[in-house]
Image 1 (cartoon, rainbow, N blue to C red):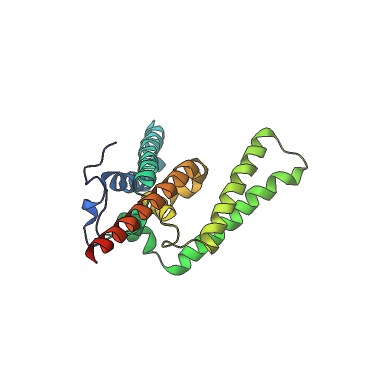
Image 2 (image 1 turned 90 degrees about the vertical axis):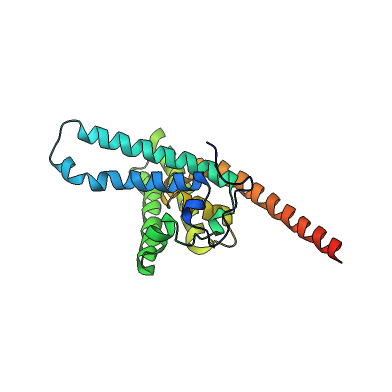
Length: 209
């Protein structure tokens, strides 16, 4: 998956969303389409058109997979793009960040309650099946991430996480465990880019004086 922008992949503040790296635009649009497909076609789904449900599910799944793969790539390749705002607004800022603050608080609370329930409920019958063990581990991972996002996360302090959230339209949270390698690699790459930029600034300053 090749991006058609400059090698450093920077989209300077003030540029339109169309000037952002291709992988970021592809990620956001693909996931948004995956969400929109069942919503737009809900009337036909209720009509019981033969095989339409399967077609809709497959189309949404393909778009969602493309979006997540593009997100994976973008998080590693452009870890600081989460800090960059498009002049005309990217899709995440238009459709997610623009939601009322009370709605975002509600989503956080619902996420915390849901993941806590997913951890606790399997223990109610006294024993866990193999599938329930995996479900609990998955829920614990999500719970930890929800707690981090709710109480510790800030866009400026965790730019790689910001890139992940923006590229995946927030939907990446639900498959967060598979993005752990990308987030680690992106964080290391981002730190390296920052160190290189700082060293270059210092070198330029010495030459100036």
